[in-house]
Length: 405
Image (cartoon, rainbow, N blue to C red; front, side, top):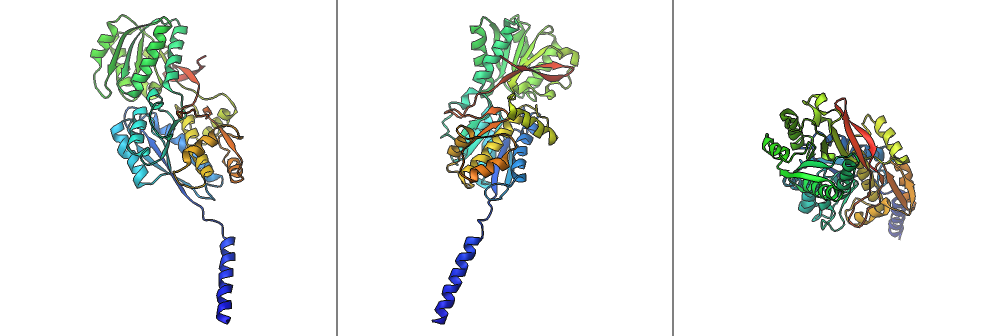
């Protein structure tokens, strides 16, 4: 009898102790799949830094899932689907990440998703993959982006040129999902608006010499050259050889978001490009959330205007919010949780407001994140609306001129 009482007493004590001890904090592994090498390598570091800043805010404001930390693991997709697939496979199947920010190029994003992300049930949010091909990807609602599609950028680029009185262009584009998608939308809109694409030439990235293509482009008679490529790849080489060759000496050079990086201008005399380059890219939202992000980035020693850094912050912060909403580091259910934290109804959450979001989510209150790049209201395809801005080169550097109306 005494032994029975002791056993019952120990059982009760263990039950009380178990109730008094809180659940252990759960760390969460999240991947950043960036194009750290290849044709946009000069653009990648600020994008990675933007995502990491969001994770740092989470870890500094109470952590995630009961005080756990976000552990970020970075992979290199090289803006190349054949590289992105194995890199994503490592993140998904070896590192066992819950979700991924990235990739940055569209082809790499699709390559990563089809090779590993979709089979593994892993949510991906790209901050910068802009080609229309991503919209139609059969992704089981796992692939999202926080930048607008080139279906929007291409229209705005065409409208911008027409508004400036530019009525004819020669155009070359890098032969991949990004280049062709943007070129097709631009050409259709520009032509419909009364413009003339005199020559339209696809090119392969990574060549040392594009003089043959430039000769063909100049042969059409236009002095305006559209280059839809990358600042650290073919775009830089084509621009440099166009300046050296003089075929477009009186031209406006026009580029998309992939060309917006000061690396594009290195080695080119400033007087050859000042006032001559026009470019477009996704721009920062102009609301309260954008101003808050600017201060957060500046305080962290980052450039708040860096190409796609705001969108990377949003992608990372959204993933953290979705994990907390989902209640665990599990992959299952994360896509639905992401849509819930990104859209109304709910109390507004702005960049950096992790502690506030955490309190609300723990209490079971709905939230609605409004990010550095604007509202993150994903449509059925995982796309968002956005702002496209005009840039120009002044004093040897890109300067943002404002939204394209």
